Length: 157
Image 1 (cartoon, rainbow, N blue to C red):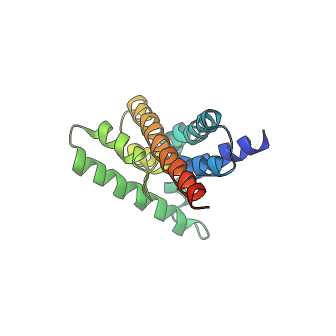
Image 2 (cartoon, one colour; image 1 turned 90 degrees about the vertical axis):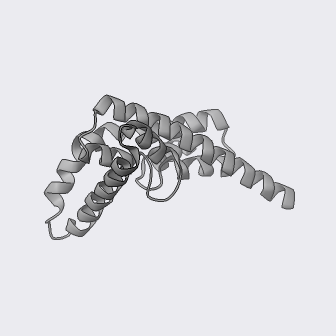
């Protein structure tokens, strides 16, 4: 049970998210289905809070002495992500959000995607559905890569 709590916590971390939680679960030898469910849940817990509050908190803190630089960085990251989504997507903005969250590369994920959705004033419900679908896609991709990596390592060993 303790390891599942760690998986839940890891999947809630910004920039790490499900992309870090699933490989850790695989390395720890945890059962795949429960680990993936816990990872998805953990990755989605912050989503509504990010959408509803992150922008307000970041705007408030961007000019504070100790946190200003970090908060400004997060705001700029969300703004850039939002601009890229708008430029590439046009009318397919929610599909673009789904792919942005779902393709597991550095700098993408539910945190950045929902911050971008908030900055762009996108619809909460549609954004959340796109983020959920993206998290599921990212989880599947990362799981496949982790299983292939562990399998290849065991073959070489």
